[in-house]
Length: 251
Image 1 (cartoon, helix red, strand yellow):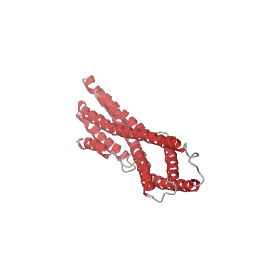
Image 2: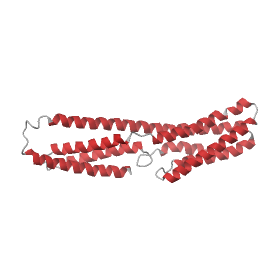
Image 3: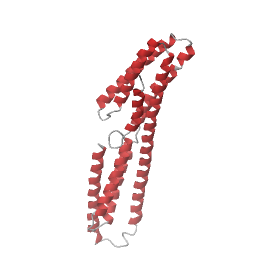
Image 4: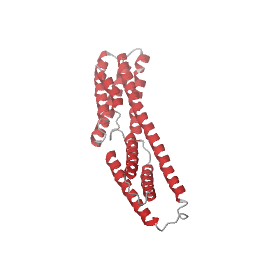
């Protein structure tokens, strides 16, 4: 989807460049030097605002991308810690809970495997929540039968952290700038293309127009890819591998 948006932006920028160039050609003969003396300042202001908006959106997208990767590692650590603390329980309780932990990690991996399939993602998240409830209920019940009690209670905080991190990850995945930011970014990109085309009035060269359109569309594509990883070329599968390793260690 992000690739289609970038392609559409590329064509739109080219269109506005051409429109601006033709408007500039039509006005070139009528416009005196005095009438155009202040246009450069306006152009610079628009270009500067576009550059500032791109810088902020890119920086924010990169920061949120890194935060999502760190949350995956935190979840893997929380699951691994809780799994190890199952050894505090009786052998019978361990067997049931460890099997549920395996199913739980499988469901967590499935939830983020293909986020473009919303139905499958929702189903996997619902299954994760159901398994969480089962794990918690069994752990509380098993903990009451273990002595000394403080040793068994070490398990519950670890389980609580494991459950809480799922909400944190969900919120982080849905945390994006308001849509108006992206609308403004596209608007400024097209306005800048119009002004750039106007300043290229009657120019026979098209290479600068292509470069300008390509740079803008690629930049916006990278920003969108960072904001919505797993939907484009930018992926965080390397971080998911940490959860895979945790699952493989559950024997």
